[in-house]
Length: 209
Image 1 (cartoon, one colour):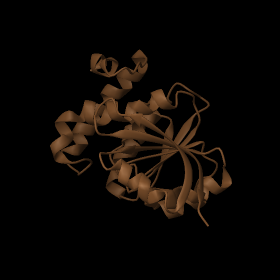
Image 2 (cartoon, helix red, strand yellow):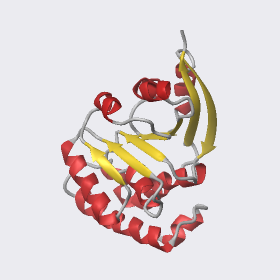
Image 3 (cartoon, one colour):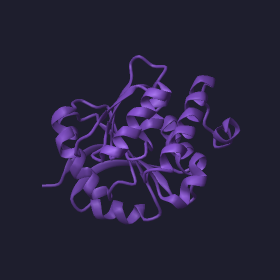
Image 4 (cartoon, rainbow, N blue to C red):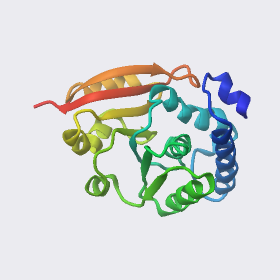
């Protein structure tokens, strides 16, 4: 599937490609037993999920400290962990409250050598455990307004925090709703996988008084 990754304009090393292929094999085995993603998208795991998650690499190419909230089946958290595997200055903490999914995520990190750790807690608890992230990611978790509520405690302690959220076709309605309660800087990155999807890069998040 290396050509598929490159077809979408994403360049990865041979080592990273091998880790991604190992993850894909592991994912398909686990997905046959537990609900990691919508069953209708399993056959599209490379384009719909892996490549979609890899887009973050083009948006934030430099290493840093990440938190991925609602990590679920590992998108984008495990994919980010794999891209960070060759950097000693980078790390990702994966927050997921479902124990079965946590078992999969731990296995995925072990098998791929991704740089990260799984935290089997709710996001509200993770705020107390994890400090000073440079970046926070989320995919298919909640609308933008709710996501801002989750991450605000981290934003309050780090004015340079950047948020990277995958969003589908209704993203503009979510942005408009969030503007009612939040101020933020926004860059919209068009998805290379889905024509009506974007990745929102957000900074300077503050709550409106």
